[in-house]
Image (cartoon, rainbow, N blue to C red):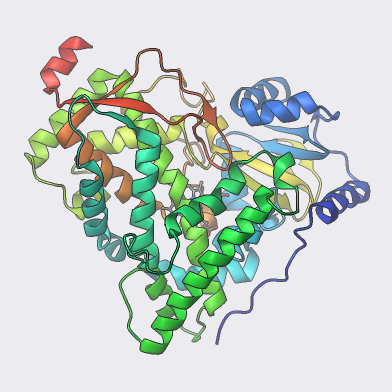
Length: 481
Ligand code: HEM
């Protein structure tokens, strides 16, 4: 029996605005203190410099405060205690579906990110075996093959845009590992990777542009791309259901998934889940690889330690999936990735809607209020991470990591909504990083200054232009530092 999906909610921007205003009118309890007057400048700053803005409010008001963005007040809850409260100890009091990212539903449908309660719990239970360690380890071959292919032609002196290079590579890996598509097969008459990018790009446009409807708007382009992709995905689902010809990609595994009560996923649910996996996993892994090489180019000693580890442990061979998935074999790589995800957690905000009123850190928050926790802001609190702007991988030495308070380090969220693709993402990041570290060094262009965009995930605004250099010996790098 297929699980019954949750009720639909309106995606009409005017209706959603009316719902927000009605909700505010119904609210009988006051919101926490904060910046509650309407301000276009603040709303704009939230797009361009959210980290400083939220940190300033944290300094002014403490860990729980309100901030009006456009017409709508949002309560920010900041710090380890708040993260633990929202994701673990009181997770049932917060919904995702009608939080501020509900706008994802037109593309994603009812995938894990946009569902709550019993439907979320049962869907996740059905899906968890698909993300078992051994299943993910089995995708390592595809990751290595694709990364090696993408690295062909990386000669010393070549310029690469690390962000766009990684994005194209991650898309090919996702096509094969998630959907079982052959990215080189163009027989269906359109480029599915380009269609996916078109659909995803809608969410990187300004909110004021996103709500426009009508021909040639980003909305219309997203819907058109979605329709093309749906035809392809439903076609693939029906072919596999009728032929019984299962592959070892995630889509096939989801088609076969069932729980102990015999519940399965309908075709629509499988489509929504794979689309959600693509959305949640694509830019997050891309950005992490990009930020890692940005920081390594600025920290030759940290890079030297990584290269030395590669040579000592692997002696020129590719690491196995087991070596990449546990932190013990390559601890320097593990720490560098952990520190990158502290400084730049791509999914930097956890958007929710409160169900019942609650009290956190002595501040009361009403029911039916937008509530955001934030890994990025917590990871920059000096009382939790001294000298928070500095790239210091040793912060994540195993003993130091074990000492961190609950909720202090949450790049993958926490509790029952912890990132289901965490292992897949980490394996992909480390596979790509290992192959690059074994072949060459990457240098930043002189004068390059990174500017970060924060929607839908943290990533460099103008890509990351870098130059490929000969691989340098660790000792020479350490001397040059
Ligand atoms: C560096 C890589 C990644 C990072 C930093 C990351 C981060 C996160 C975070 C923070 C959440 C929780 C959001 C919240 O609490 O509101 C999340 C959820 C999720 N992630 Fe990831 N993610 C990554 C890679 C992936 C990959 C590769 C996939 C898929 C293959 C994926 C699929 C998902 C899904 C489906 C959820 C929703 C889980 C649920 O609500 O049950 N993620 N991710």
